[in-house]
Image 1 (cartoon, rainbow, N blue to C red):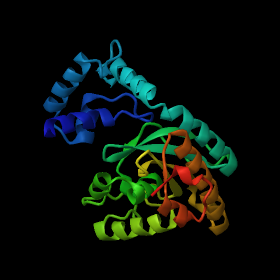
Image 2 (image 1 turned 60 degrees about the vertical axis):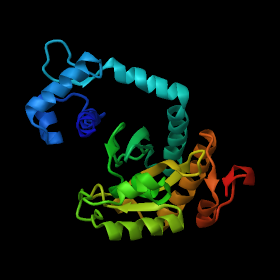
Image 3 (image 1 turned 45 degrees about the vertical axis):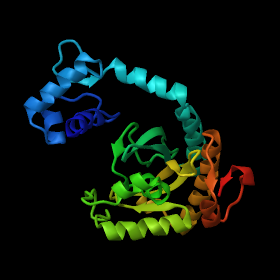
Image 4 (image 1 turned 45 degrees about the horizontal axis):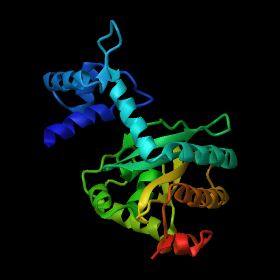
Length: 268
């Protein structure tokens, strides 16, 4: 199982910001030796998970990944619905907005819309990151399933900035606060110039399936902006939950003091 986990880490490296990677880069980023990386890449290449453009020694994702993505969307067409919600949210907030889904023990960004201002935050599409440092990840830890939460609260927790919470007990306290209030604030914890605000949307089990978030330059965030942002995110999260056939837990309704869904859609 450890070998499979190491191999999958290679696929996780390919993102919108890093779509093409060489062997040396992959080895450095995964911490695996080059010989091991080469063997794994060869297997991935044989099965179409990665490919090398003609005349290049670097790798990019192959057609098999596209087939799997299309199959996932056929079974559960989440991305188009979330993208439409994110597009509308970005217009209302004027800030960069994004949606993420819980993907194993990480958070994967599946929809992004840049803000309308000239000074705006860039969020990479398809990135998979640990949940403890971002607004989407933190609120998913507050409302996610027990296995995801237990893993996410376990050290070691890498520091992305000096403001990243890396102590497990401190993180647990922070997550508990976010659960009580219904939204998270990542105050310069992933990017030293950015404040993220996140609200969960829920699956059929009334647990967080993912989250919606805004990413705002820290210099532009104040109390009034935060209140307005949270209200818009809650409204959008209700819409996302409804679009995905989810159920809002009663605790979330109480925490946000907003009861806009019919009782038939609330859990408990």
